[in-house]
Amino acid sequence: MAKQGGMAMHFVAWITGVIVSLAVAFGMIGETLTIPYIPTVVTVIVGWIVVITTILSVVLAIAKN
Image 1 (cartoon, rainbow, N blue to C red):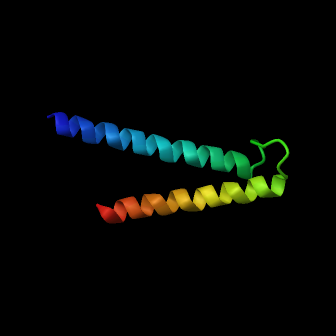
Image 2 (cartoon, helix red, strand yellow; image 1 turned 90 degrees about the vertical axis):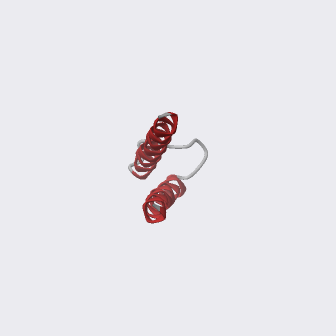
């Protein structure tokens, strides 16, 4: 029973991380989130990198199971 609860908490933590990563990335892409002293174009590019790597990690996690 404890193992099932541990797996559920692990999944909740993982999905929360994915959602937060995508939310921050899309905020950077849409220029809602900016970083002082860093050009906007760099922020947008980094946002796209975060989106791509997050989606890649989701695909790899599904393929692993």
